[in-house]
Length: 367
Image 1 (cartoon, one colour):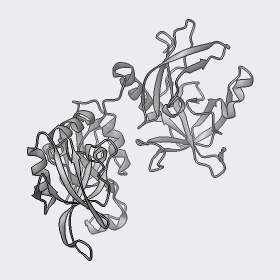
Image 2 (image 1 turned 90 degrees about the vertical axis):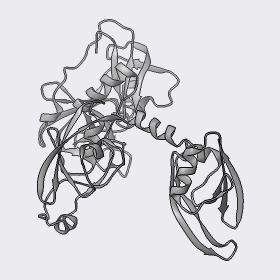
Image 3 (image 1 turned 180 degrees about the vertical axis):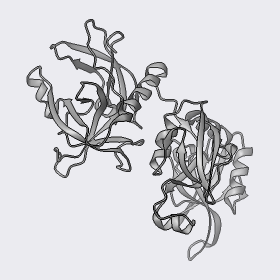
């Protein structure tokens, strides 16, 4: 945005930076302010105070096709530090909607064979008309350099994220409240569908979630969300996360061989997390399971075992570890997860836990 001085780059480029300097193609060096960043999509927005700025026209990444010519522009290996010219490489769109790469939290990449190397991150991917269609962000390589497999974030996705960063400083990410998995040919056949049937299989619907309110059920196969056809599980998270909070989502599913469309209202992830945390602050962020075992040291153990603990949870801060077995809370014996959850919800001040850890035992206080 040349009028307001907004610049889009990758989150990983400016992450942990104390100061940010932008070098323009005309040689000007400008101090930049971070407006907002989103690690899930690896997008960040900066702002500079300058006149006579230029920008690229936006293209439409939704109409890109495999085989389209593209040009990657950037600063590979810091070569631009020795001059004022950017590097440009030429290639084609190798694939669309690449996901499951474990590069970012939300993945929907354009794959290209245009040479992308370290230093290209945050640079432009343009079509032959000079229109911006993506932001170069990552490569797959055994050697740290280009091997013809580079990835760019589609500009339509970048635009949605950057608009929220400019308006709010963060992304108000949508939530549906379902766990989905890929529909394999074996699962499709077991559900009496053709082995080439495509979609995302719902494995769980969270209680009280927009998905449950809309009528979605475990075993449903999501085939479309609004105008987006769903062929793999990762598309569900990407599609929902980019919907505006409060907007309607038309979700088409296959249920027992019949196609039905349900309407859900997207809720805010952060507000949902805050709601869950406020409903049970002592146990929020902990994954628990019922536990029973005969131990040569402790005898017959019945309790609740910690199988997961997020770093920012009250339990983790109090010292709970994965593998700990909770046998009492506030002097009340604990024999199952449901009882612990109910006791914790009713407690207002603190939760004193007696736990077994390895060969020993100790008390921990969650406040």
